[in-house]
Length: 188
Image 1 (cartoon, rainbow, N blue to C red):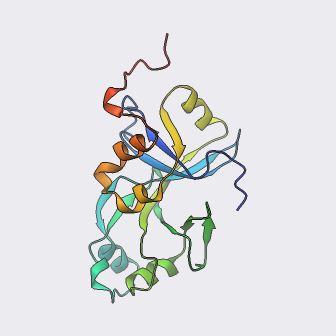
Image 2 (cartoon, rainbow, N blue to C red):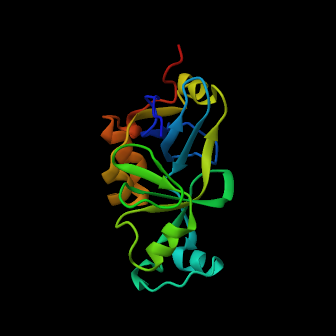
């Protein structure tokens, strides 16, 4: 994957005053960004009520690893919410994977779900339905309007931090205390 963008592999952290219900208090992991072009990412802190057990049932996949049955499925964003994505550390090759950074990949094929259900998939992962997408220049406009904080991602926040703590943890990783931000940032 060609990662010429300085934003690919970064967190997009919703500013406290971002009122869009799709992104209120979210952390999005930016999987692809073309400067001046579009961008794509997955929200990593919005678990749904759907579990992996229920998803595999819908996909007619047998779970032989009982520990994964209650793994939450995340709302990855408002685009193509019927499509699944698995964010995971780089390791084995799956049918349809994009290596985002040397450490993190995104897979969009059923074989990784089958492997997870069988207990032979990646040790750490986040499964999302849908993704977040931005058209040409849209993300740059939102960044200029102070809708987002952005900075390099930390895989421990993605895979090891509880979902409800990822928003503040991602901001803290960048040295920002969200509770101390004014809604007037960037406005004279």
